[in-house]
Length: 380
Image 1 (cartoon, one colour):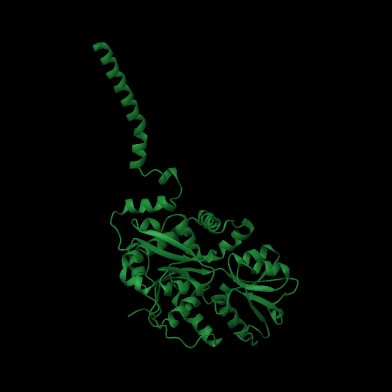
Image 2: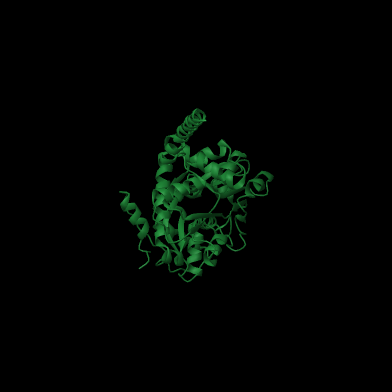
């Protein structure tokens, strides 16, 4: 009996020793945050949220933050920041609830209605939302992107800019950023267009970006003034670039995407807003340092959101035309506001207070980057 008991004890000890050795790599992996660093090129999704919580144990003041964006490459900061977990990593366990929108007014409505906290959006909806709420519901807290807008036409019908007269040109929506820019360009040509109906020397056809490529292929429009990737989709279908909006701006920079926040959320959860801005600043830095990886990441997010990635012939040229930037390029927003007034789409707005760049400049300073200007339109 004694020898049997001794043999059992030795066998049990051996099994326990082997189990401990087998478990050791798992323990080492856990301590080393397996899935990050050299063993995985990118954090993503829930793993990134856990990494953020582990990296910064302090809990923030909100359990979740609802972030809106468009499935456009001009929203690259949002696409890449969410896909790579670079925003989530700064949130110390605060969950991100992403929401995708196809039009600025619907995103503004969500922000004003309290179902969205932070959004990536163009300047015209930002201005409209700020004015309609009588300066009470939103603030622009950062820039995100410049450029990425082109006038693409059917080269069989339109060979010069003067050929646009009498043609049907699409913009994404009445009063949206591209619509305002195109109406201003038409005005500077000395042509007349009714801004409400879009009828005139040029027919401005307000068409959802999802529909525009099919309308172009079917010949119901002759061209479009649109953001990426819609512009490059039209090019891949035989269109040619007649004008790049970047060339119309003195420094070849203009705001195409802002980051906005609900004033209520900013007041109650400034720490969460600051964390999101740390994430966007780091995302823009990562995009600029890793353009090819960032392009693939944005495409992966578009696929995850819409079920279909962009072809290389679309995303490659589109990506090159977009500049991600923390700078909101505030002077260009004021110019675009003046264009909307000129087109009689809005009355002269009081934009004083539309920006609050306090937290962004705090983040930039901490990162050793230059602070950015609100062009005198900051909150007092």
